[in-house]
Length: 299
Image 1 (cartoon, rainbow, N blue to C red):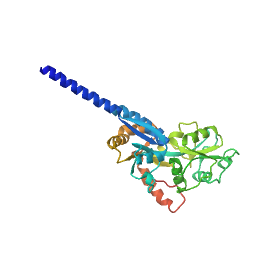
Image 2 (tube, helix red, strand yellow):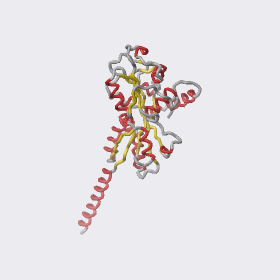
Image 3 (cartoon, rainbow, N blue to C red):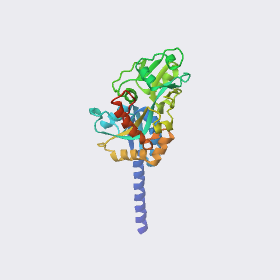
Image 4 (cartoon, rainbow, N blue to C red):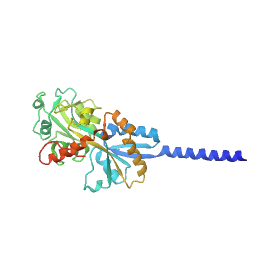
C-alpha cells in the first residue's frame, strides 16, 4: 500500500514539474524598438536568455520612439531605444530607461568613395547645405547627396541634431529623406555620391564605407575611450505598471550580468558599465555646449 501511495505521490510530483516546465517554456515577453539596438545586442541576448530560462522574447522593430511609447501605453513589455525619453512628452511618461550599452553614429558613404575622413566642422557644413560637392572634401568633382532619416525624434535624427548642433530643432538640407535606417543604408550602398549618418551596429553589416571623424575610426577602443566623438547610450525601457514586471526586470538584470555583457561585447558593442567615464565626459560637454557651438551629448 505504501508503495502505491509513494508511486502516486511521485507521479503527481513529476506531473507538477512537467506543468511548471511547460509554463516556463511558454512565457513570452514582447520587445519593440530601434533596429540599431536589435542588431547591436538584443537579438543574440534574447536567444541566450531563452536558452537559459525558457522565456521567449518576441522581437519587433518600429524604431526608438515606438520602443518608448509602446512601453508607456503597455502595448509592449520591453523597449529598445537609441535615445532617451523626451521629458514632458505625455506619450513617454512613466517609462524607466535603463542604460545597457554604448553605440556610435557613423558617417557612411559608397564603398568606392575615395574620401576616408571628415572633420566635425565639415560634417556640420554638409548638413547645413554649405558643402554640396565631394571636391570640397578631397573627393571627385561630383555632387554630394545627403540622405537623412525622417523626423526629428527618431533615434538617429534626434541624436545627430544634439551631437552636431546641440539643437533638437536643427533643420538639415537633405537630398533625400528616408523613413528608416535600413532603406537609407541600402541606398548609400548603391549611390557613389551619397553620404549619410547611421548607427554603427547596423551600418557595419552593410557594404558601405565608414569614414573616420577628425582622424578617429569608430572602433571598439575609440568608442570606449571617448576618442570617437559621436557616441550615445542604448537603453532598455520598461513600465513599472507592467503585469509582467518581475519577468521584465529579470531580463534586464540578465543584460547587465557578466554573461549578458559578454554577449554584448561579442557583437562589437561596448557594455554600458565598461565606459562609465563617458558619462562624466557627456556632462562636461553638455555644460560647455551651453556657451559654445561645440559637440554636445546627452544620456
